[in-house]
Amino acid sequence: MTDETRTFSTTETSFAVVHVIEDAGGATFAELRSRLDLSKSSLYYHLATLEKLGYVVKEDGTYQLGLRFLSHAERARRKEPAFDVVRSKARDLADEIPEEITFSTEENGRLVVVYHNIGGSAMTDFKIGQYLHMHATANGKVLLAEMSDERIDEIIDRWGLPALTEQTITDRDELRAELDRIAEQGYAVNDEEQREGLRSVGAKITKPDGSVLGGLAVDGPTYRLTDEQIEQSTVGRLFDTIDEIEAELG
Image (cartoon, rainbow, N blue to C red; front, side):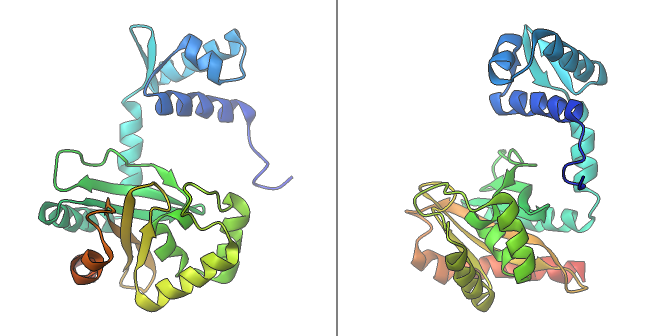
């Protein structure tokens, strides 16, 4: 039995309940039963345990995620002190331009959002903790471009290259050619590959020891984040911010 298959079904089921509640933005017992292949008694005991531990709360018949998750999320984010530096500089960039600013890093072959801000607005961090496919995002591709061929193959073998839009790269050789271009130019462009109507420009942030901390991206609608805008302004402002981050980290 490998480490990957040595899991406990009870734990997996509890997290499946949590994920359904999260995805639905809250769910009743009946809605959870319709989404999960569980008996009434099994679902009841999972919910009761999660509720007892503070990970789930029941409000007017609807189960919601509990605030207990907040402490775990904050501890996970603060395990890397450099994230605070990135957060501060990314917020400054978000205040300057009317686009989305996203800082992400790689974990277990997927991209996880650590910081997100929309044009300096109050809509901050609502994407925190989201896991994304690396091949379909600017930050993901710029991080893949730094990896060995063996590591890239491992990620593709595990997560595949699913088509999220008609523009998503789903061919391994085509992705490798794209990663070569990204390594040469120093930044990646996501051209409606994750979501229709959205373009992104991402570049890596490097630690003082030369390792990669994560990727910082500017996301915006296609009509505003044009090729001309990217080349004449966006890339330069992105690199300036990353230079400031790396200088402070150093």
